[in-house]
Image 1 (tube, one colour):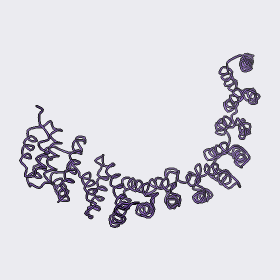
Image 2 (image 1 turned 90 degrees about the vertical axis):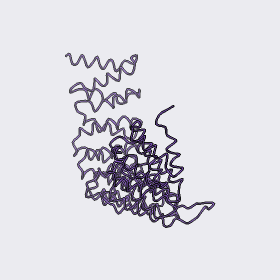
Image 3 (image 1 turned 180 degrees about the horizontal axis):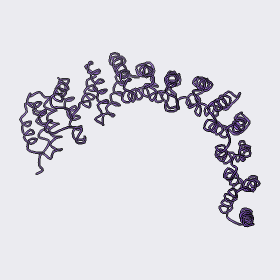
Image 4 (image 1 turned 120 degrees about the horizontal axis):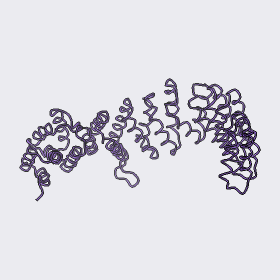
Length: 465
């Protein structure tokens, strides 16, 4: 008796049009939760004239004690103005429905004419999430293959089907989509390796690799970016990035390929060979179109872009990154006119926390590349100095070790070595608060035979006046 009275009170609240809507919709939610009677009591309100009440009733249906029973009613709204609310509620109802009953209900709502495009996309997503793999693959492949199926529904089948690629029907869908309209190709590119079984990843990487060769210059950048996470399973696929970066006849897609190539070299260890190959191909074909009206040394511009990207990634003292920078720098240093890019990379690849001997050797080799280039020597020395100022303690090692290195560089009288010594002295002086040994070193540098070195040493003061 009390339960019946409570239900009548709730129903009076819902029916009272003078009450604010939020009270009436809240009452619908309470009505749905009444055991045994909620479902039958809420259903009549789903056709109410008032949109807010009708939608609240639909939203309440899956919250009864028989959520699965509401699914047929909710799916019936897939094509009308209530589709948005009904399909959201259908997701909850579907999660409570036995797969054997769910499969035919969902399958009936995938074809053109059975619901709005957004509703059909949601049905596809629910099928992939809730049905056993074989049933889900069958439903998605069938939905994809329907004649006149909307391209967005097809794209949803491709996207939701990635975890189901163990089923041959989904492979056929993915391969068809890879040669299909732009929206389908984009859906293929959206997959991530973690969604697939490891043994399927090399095969999928080939699909992405083929998409990198698309004739569409607006799609190629998406494909280049998408390829990077797949490269650990297909290192050879980086060759398509090298092709795009080094093909000087095409100007629309090299930038995205360069970005991908640098990301790959720094994240997938096997692909740094590809980056070095691209750099050496560009470095040797570097003389075309010199200062033309339309183009100016396109290969050189591309090398500059790659070197700039690598320099930006050198902020951490990561030894894997440093090894890539060093190899890239050595590759470019073989061409006299690429020296500025080469030394910028080499300066950023030095391990400033190394023991004095290897660090000294590295700095001497770096200085030797600056013969006849005083302006570049000043720039390189400033770069090395900035690294010492900017790094956290452990990454630049022990100032005492650096003091040994600096003293040896300063003693030779070589201008480039002297500039490195001066910038390192200024940086370490600032870091240590100008302790005695660094003040002595600065004093010595102010007597250096090279004017440029003395200028740097005099520009810094150990104490303010």
